Image 1: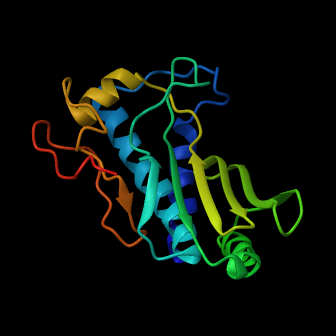
Image 2: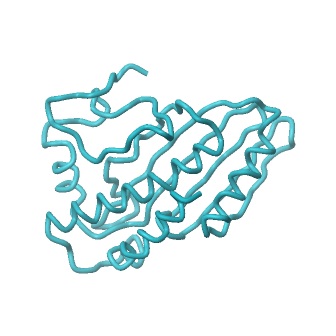
Length: 205
């Protein structure tokens, strides 16, 4: 909970750097400014999201999208971060964990909404945060069989996503080739960027 609160406070300082809309335009930052902004945003949204993950399960969680690669989807000339994590819990724990996630987010200062599909035996239920703080969208989906999927997307930010990606990974280093984890726990240390030519993680799922 405290991590998420810290992330919201940090996001207040980042907010002036975010695009008013994904297609908006503001003065493009220098390379060093962009890297510093991206690092601040990255740690803020990862800390907030890891706080949510920890409420559900200690992990490790399967990485569906690591969350460090700048994406330009829907951002015009800007970029955003997005991630996906999945795991499975005891189906009997689904209602309590969903309530716990909603309570955690509310305590952290977010307004949450929910969505239910199907019935309690074969359906799913979502806890959702839209366009608040470090999130353009946070969606936590609990399926009746115990499957859980968490997706998180930051607001669009001004800057060159290709230059930022090169700064993070090197011109020839490709995320997913042993450079980024395929599984991760909420308590694992966070890092930003990699050393090209020195993969740290197994690419085997």
